[in-house]
Amino acid sequence: MKMLENFKNLSIETFLMLASVAFVLKVNALILNLIGFLICIFITLHIALTYQEQLKIIKAWIYGLLKWRDRQKVASECEGKINLFSKKIGSELIGKEFPKVKIRLVTGEEEDYFENGNFIIRVKDSGNPNKNLLIVALRFFSKTLIPETKQYLHNTLVKSIDFFSVKRFLDENAERLNSLFYEEYYYPECQKEPKIKECFGLYGVLDNVGIFNRVFLQELIFLGRKAHFLFEPDDPKITGEVVALLNFLKNIAGKERGEDAVSGLTFTGKILRTGVVLVAGEEKMILGDSNPFIWRVNNHLEKGIENIYLMAWGKNIDFLKVIAHDYLDKDPRIENIKEQSYLIKDGKLKAFLVLYKKK
Image 1 (cartoon, helix red, strand yellow):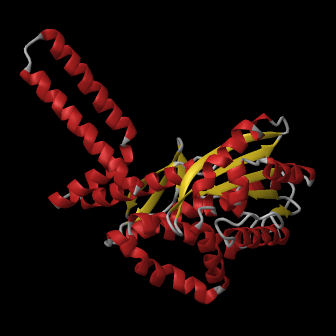
Image 2 (tube, rainbow, N blue to C red):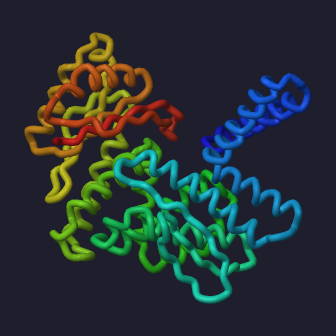
Image 3 (cartoon, rainbow, N blue to C red):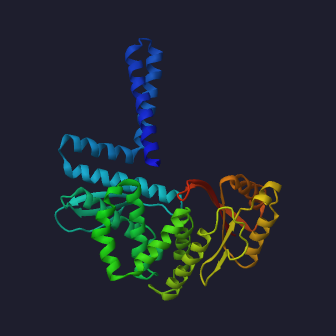
């Protein structure tokens, strides 16, 4: 939906640019010509800077229609779709900025590398554009998703996170390729390591309520930074902690939308100390009683919780904003580092999240 909205905006701005050009050509007054000319320049620059990835996809379509420069079509389409998707993921995370991917179709050695803020993927053209897109997506997410954390995790967790991110990418950009992904990559790996399928199921539960990226991956980013210089690569203690966090979040995701949950919303591991406050309970919302939720935040802080996520759905969103902006933002012990609106897949319900970090 987001991609369609971006293309709609691009179409509108392109129409305005063409209308400005027509205006300049038709009007004879010098001052009006100058104004129209400046408007054309402004809109053109705005389109070029704002819709770079959409223009790559359009360029790929044009190459496909003309039936020439097929290799360029493959590269442009892969770049555009992956860069748009990674930008969306980056907007959901604090402290994460993805490099832009650039595709180099080669006949020789396939070697990926970082250069000037870009991630260069050298890939052999398989002759199948669908397979090319899958290969590029897998290599992109495996190298850029949470590199600061992956070195400490068991390979099953690493592979399952990469695969699930690729699946989410395909669901939004090329759903027709899910069967190919299943047959070529997911099923063979699950045959070797069945727990990948189990992890997939847990990730799906989190993603249905919008917290796979916004909470789970966010905590993994925090974990990677804290683990530096303290743990050895592939340390079982960290893998155990991540599995425990995953089950903790699964229990939260399974709570009813209006459930006024009090207990079981703190995760106190050896590295991660995470708390969740669900702003729910119709009676408290009607009465405007924010005290129970502020008490829970205070309780989290007393337990040494470092990251506190406040979440609300539907009609409770405005109440959460009042609690955050009128009370918690003024608390000198914590800092508001993220606010996000989003849609819950399960029921298409509006949701809102605020993340506070202990100072």
